[in-house]
Image (tube, rainbow, N blue to C red; front, side, top):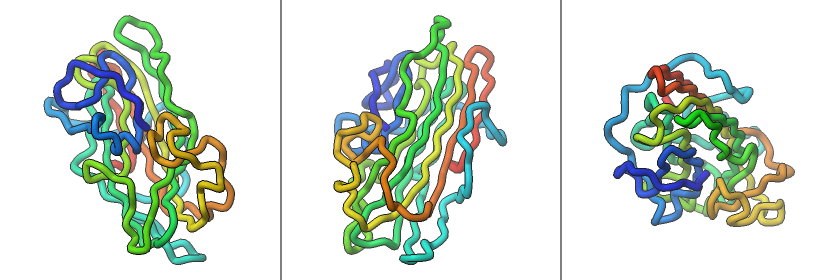
Length: 236
């Protein structure tokens, strides 16, 4: 989820100066876009909800029930610590694990985002509303591609000075499946969805993915003019 414009902050190799940062799991696969946790982040505050929320059914934090048909599970571990600051910046890296073999982890992403820049104008940059992206799983349950010790990265809002004076809200949800079907025959292709980078992805609903094995989400609302901050989700 992955297109970023450069900002003045020294802590990310690709950043945005007063602009929306698009999240991309596959940004992790571009060496020139390697993102790092940065310092100077205010302590996060947690609340139970945010105004722009995608319905969240069967959420499960870092665990998933076995698929009743093939006894496959998918879990995740947060890499480092999720970041959210009073200017609306959100950053979350995860590492997937699975008992599946010789198949694909497929993640359905649903996004909502709206923001107003410091000059009062609406931010025209919006993420792809809905898409599916996939990671390959080999015979030893090794998942690829990965980079920076993570498979997926969710990133929202404005980083550093670029977020001063901004307001906005976002909502993200990821539903995760495992399939042994050939996704390349199910509409998936590399570099086909900008937010998915070079992962195999599609914006058309795939057929036959089976049960949702894992769900995760993140919601946020911020007002940089008064420091008001609300975040919730399965990122901890």
